[in-house]
Every structure is written in C-alpha cells, then in structure tokens.
Image (cartoon, rainbow, N blue to C red):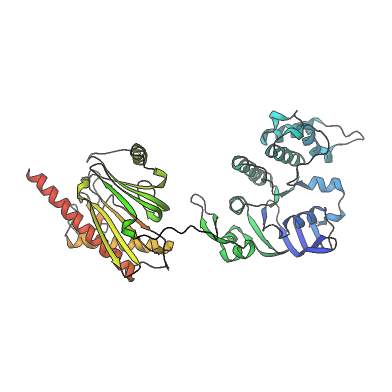
Length: 494
C-alpha cells in the first residue's frame, strides 16, 4: 500500500528524519510512536507533502506520491491532523462536505445525492449529526476533532493518515473514535497510519508499531515490541514496566517516576492494627502491601491495605459472595477497593497469629483460621461429593521484604507447602478417600510484602525466606487446626 524508501527531510535543509524505510500493508493499522522531538510530525509532513523530501521517495500502490495530482491523492489518502483551525466561519455540514470535493464534477462542483448519503452516514457514525448546522468555531476541541474525522471519512479514502487524532478527546470519545476506525479497517480494508501519544492505546488498537528515536526507527514490529522495556526506556528516557492486559493478550505499560515517597521506618510488627471479633478479623497496615491472593475480593496481584476474614454460617450459600463481602465492608467502613476479603464458617475466636524474625532484615507473620470439615486429598481419584461440610483454611502471610512477582508466586508455593505439611503431621484425612488431605476445597490465601529493602527474586523452599514462610505457616496452621478439632470435639460431646 505505502512504501517509504530512504526518506530524509526536515526544515531549512536540516534533516530531522535521517533515512526511513517502511512498508505499510493494505488494511493495516500502523502506529508511529516516539517522544516529542523524535521526528514523528516531521515524518508525517514529509509523507503528506507538507515538507519537501531531501532524499528518498514515498510510493503508494506502486506510484510515487509526488507524481499524483491533488485530486488523485485525495481519493487515496485522507489526513487528520492535531490542528483544528478553520479560517472561515463554516458550519459543521460545510466542513464535512469538503471531504466530497474529489468526487464532485462540473465547474460548480455541486453536491450529488451520493455525496449527501455519504455525509449523512459519516455524521451518524461520528455522532456529529446533532450539531451539523452549528458554526465550526463554536465547538469544543473534541467535537471539532470528530467533525474533522467525519470530513476525512467522507473522502472514502483507501488510507487514513492521523496525527495524534485523540489529542483533544476524553477517554470515552478516544475509545469511540478508535473503535470506529478499527471497524472501518476490518470491514472496509482501510489502511491507517497514526501518530499516537498513548502507548497503551497504541497497544490496544495497532497491528504494528514503529519506535522513532532521533529521526530513525529503533525498531518496527508487532505490538509485542512494547514488551521490550530496555528499548522503551532508551526512547522515552523514563523507567518503564510492562505487563499483560488482564482481559486481552496485549501489553500495557506502567511508567515509574524517579521521585518516590519513602515511608517512615517502623518495626514491621508495629506497622499494622488488628481487630478481632465474632464477625470478622480485620488487619489494617499503614502502607499498602504488594499482594498475591485468591481471596473472594482482592484477588490477583495488587496493592492492598486491608485484609479481612468474615464469619459466615455453616449453611451459607450465595451466588455472589463478593457482593456480600463488599456490603459487609461498607457497613464497617472498610474500603473494599483496597482490600482482600475472605470468608469462613470457623469460629473466629480460634484465629492464630504466628510471628518470626528472619535475620536482621525480614519479619514474617501468618494469620490463620482453619476448619477441616471438607478436607480434600487433591491427588485422590475419588469423586468429590457435592454436599460437603463447611470447612476452610484461610491463610494470610505478611512479610517485611521486597519481592519480584516471581518471588510472590514462590512465596505462595512455600506457604502452601507449609500448610500441607501441617495437615499431614496432624493426620487430617479426606473423608471420601481416607488418604491424607492436602487442603480443603475452599482454601483462601494471601501473601503480602512491604516492598522495602533489597529486591528478592526467589522465595521458594530452597531459600532462607521461603523456608521461613513455610515454618510460620506450618506453625499457625497446626495450632489453628488443633483449636478447630478441640472445638468440634467439645461440640460433639455437648
């Protein structure tokens, strides 16, 4: 569709673009990325002919752009820039009608029935119909951008060149515009070349990206190019962390400022408060902790300040337990957006808190409630019964340390190993298979770290910190299960 061959150009014979080769396929969405001053807008102007080429050539469908007339170019390429300046007091409808100019015939260039049909269609899909009679100058920046997009689409181009098209748009209208462009790309084979400022938006919509650095491409590739942190840091000169989008298989980027707040140093075991009663156990930390959890709410990897374990009746049954926990938290003025929430039918008076110092740098605390009424051997081939007794082991582990995400997973494994070993030593069995249990069918766990101190990449059972996690969880689980069994025995005898 479009080929750039050895493009060199700039201002007053000073090259800003220093040799660009690029091929954009028909029906592709290509995003040009780079910081201010990297040459993005200059390259855009060289392609559109707003600046003369010092060297190289732009070719579209096998023809040099420089050889095409203005009308021939307009039938192939539409341009949408950041600038929304219009010299005359045109109405919205008149602005959009300019997009039909390449198709008008005769000396007077009157609009045809087909022209009006196209205009009505693009006004409807860009949501500009409601102000088609308004003067363009009276519109907001976002409204102007939508009108100019409608004008560009009215050209029915094969290729659309966009210079930061969402610059004046809020989040809602940004996504509406780009969703529309993706629909046109996929349904009509529209080719899109866009300068985008937001890397995360580019990742969501582009098929390929080009990282422009000091007038040259540092790299051109698919969206997984945006997973290369070293490349991004070189281009943008800021610390970048990449992660996967939680809903679609595309990367998203997080920028880390050089300035960071340094929390007041305090003994770890003095950095939280705990409230215990028959309805819930609630721990509140002064600073958010980095967590990994399978809690009813607050699951996944997050930053959390509040950790709650709520008591429910033995026959509790609800299709939306997360909504229940949120409602309970609101009742007690606990912000559920900053919380991990679990639930258990175990008597919360039997909660166990175990603590351990690990050398001079680390402290660990485990908070465990345990019931074994539905103990399960995960390796057993005996089919689980649907109607089982309520019983769960809820484990909370808090550590004064700095873990990588991999170490968080290691830590969960170490905590689980400690729990399983405790069940084995206590000879807790799966009532269906009569084999040693590995847990219960409803276990919850959270591991939370302060992210203070030297970074720890591993926390498995072969490390000092991993072994300590297992020891603390083993101790807390053992004592919690013993309390549970004692209470069950007393109740059975009463």
